[in-house]
Image (cartoon, rainbow, N blue to C red; front, side, top):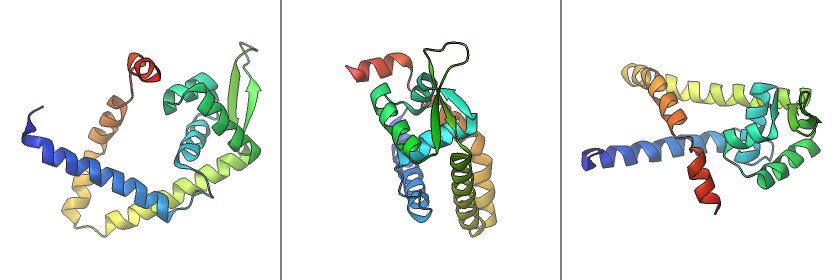
Length: 154
């Protein structure tokens, strides 16, 4: 891409990061890290997911994921179980407490962002909502491909 857009792309990157951090700071995650909250959210949305699938979605190595799941398990937010089809596979399931926490935090974060969006001029509010599909496509495109992950692990 041409350097014509470099400044705008940098501004977008900074703005997205600031928005994410501000939401994190204003809606406490009950002492949990961003990664722990993300793993809980991934598992809560799926209700049950294989460890390897969680690692892929979150971009985490198995050792790090195991530690995070252990912390979530200790807090009673998820539990590990054997896979139904393959008893050697480990599945992570959200508990009722984990689902409640995830729902509460999601609602608080959505409310906070919604309140800030409503404070914007109407044309900017509409422009941001119109950009959601493009941002979702970008988020999907940002996922690392397998060879990138393998190369980074070396």
